[in-house]
Image 1: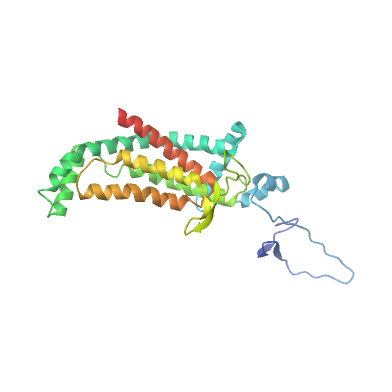
Image 2: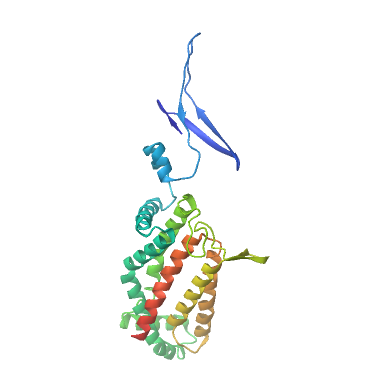
Length: 286
């Protein structure tokens, strides 16, 4: 809402899916007999479409706020728009965007993969430490950390790329949740990148999943599973069994979380996971 003259406060209330109410608080006025006082306002009720708002009033684009990671979301939107102008498809733009983010974080991802390979090499020595210190967990942990320091291995190094991905992920989620640029945008079998990919509908509704068969989160889950499998150290004790269980639970948990999310967001995470998995295969061969 934008007054032609002066500043006013206003409120907006959604009555139902088809009706909304806008109220304006005006200043006290003294109108003498025979006088008229006309106040004009511009009111916009609609999607947060940057082009549409800019066409009405360029200053109104400043009201678009994407949440906690607003600054990152705005940068993402500009980059996605640029990529879409070259590719002429929002799905391809998201894939190119995923590739750019992957390349930006590649040095950290490479360090993570090398660290995990070094930890795999240390597994026989760690197993050798477990037997004499099985009744003393504190001593065992101290010896294992000493082994890591000796070989300059950071056990938490693998978490850093994932931690850096989180602001990007949430910023992209907030961007897709509050804008309409992906509404109705299709890619391959996906009819709408702003909604789950919905390959087909199931005859029954499944708890936490519903009656939609979304193939993209399942593909993402499989990639994450094989990535975990190839990075899991080879051991033969209780710790190994726990790691095997986690290698299954972790991808399944992500699959459930992503199952009902917009296909554009799942596509981004799938491509990123696939790129990391392919490079992990190369690292393993080396």
